[in-house]
Length: 363
Image (cartoon, rainbow, N blue to C red; front, side):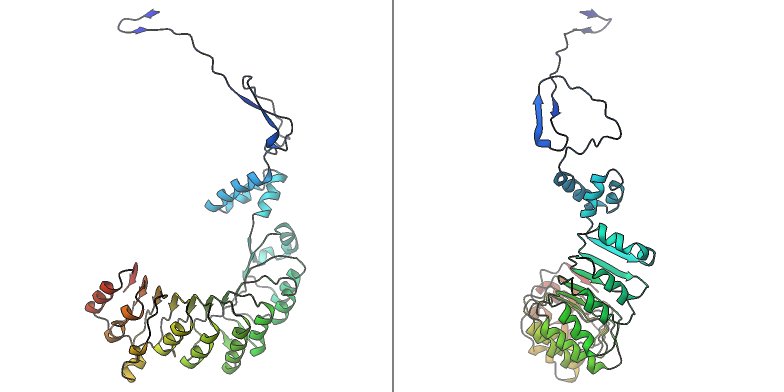
């Protein structure tokens, strides 16, 4: 006992804590660890030893996946730690963006990342057909391919590419220059499993060839769910009515900038595409036909599956068009009417009262 001026302290004997250590009969298998009751002992480990190799690759892979969810740069740092980590991080790389600077290293990259599912060529400036023929030599299971904009459609390269890569479900080729309708027919022949197709801003000398080729494509690709035809300015209501018959699985469509389209195109889509939940028809002439033909929007049927409708900058929209939206689209969650000048406050209140599920409204 020790007595101070103001306080008294009891000096009790300290009870030694029992600690446990893990002893490993094999550094390669965590399951071989034996729990002992001896006090923890630290072992001197040289830097050359793989102190983390006793964990199975599956364990590290789970950890790295969690880290990769926060930042893709973590994998780059981890790959420098050891050969084991390099091998694991290589297997976790599923997407690759090729640029001009990576052109000389293409074979090494494709050998290294064997689990790639997505390839982005949008920043690649060299010959496309030649590149696609090189990729043909690697048995990748790609599901997504993004081609650079404003180039001639690489028909020959894609034909070779598809001989070994038959798993593609997403293809992006914006602003491409198409030679004839055989180019689009080739897409269907090479990639019949497509679910996502982006052909925005197509450049075609003969519009009829594009339409014929597109019909051929859709008749052979029955699984398309996401379709982007933005700024295909020669599309009209009749075209949309015809190709919507092939799109039973369609979930989302982008027709922004297709200024020839009216509400007849909207009617064809919601009637013929029973799964369609997202429609973008900005900068179109929706509303014009109603004005000229005695309010044809009243002929529309109820489409409960539609959740998102974007009609920004549709200058012909009026209150008499929008008043019907709650009846036609009772489950709307997203509505974009921005830059539409002739819509009153009263009609917006009406829509919000009747469409109680709206979460996003852009005026």
